[in-house]
Length: 324
Image (cartoon, rainbow, N blue to C red; front, side):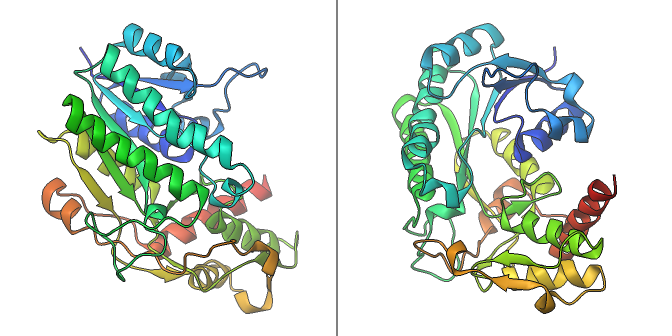
């Protein structure tokens, strides 16, 4: 019998790549989707990857414990990946209550459902480097103190510590991946990486003349989502649950991303970028730089896709979309 995996947030960037990865490993994959008035779930990312017809969609909601218990009872998953979240940091200041309900209380609901109906399953929680925020050290690892600087970061920290608490209190095989920025052609256009690559492609095709950005000197540790979902799976294959920083160990600024994207198209970024102070965060995070030594050592994980390859892949995908 194939292993059974349940993914919340299956229609997002990470959920889509993870679904394809698990299907390729021979898993049966169920994906949780919220009930909407649309005829079908927003599965365009899964369709882009060619796996939408292989995922079994089920109705559920992060704020409805009863629906989650029902899913655990009916599906009897071997592995549960909680990727559902209000994931755009900038929006979390405008929707802090929604962000907390989904990213914080939603994690409690999923873990309660696991504890009640699937205590033998292995659980993955999508934690975030945004929990470090105003970090006390230049590089961040699993022992670095947290100092979140957004409602998103605060909500993710609640979910992270709840996962640790359920592991230690109830003996669940519950692991958290503290993932640093990971991008791909499936990233939403509201995120700065995709905003840059889509903007560069539009300018190249004479569909725009500039892009508006905020703090282009902010530095992040950028990787490819395709690499990072592999790390999620590797965590759940370990005998003991634990928490892991997943990062490349390399940092680059938003300005660097712009130079790579525009340079790939034979353009100069500085001729097309407009700095808009309104796009700066109320509380900035200037540097996030991961130390993935533990993931390297314990999981045997390594990123396979470099920053330049990632950005060029995103630019080419945006060119193809726009031309179509």
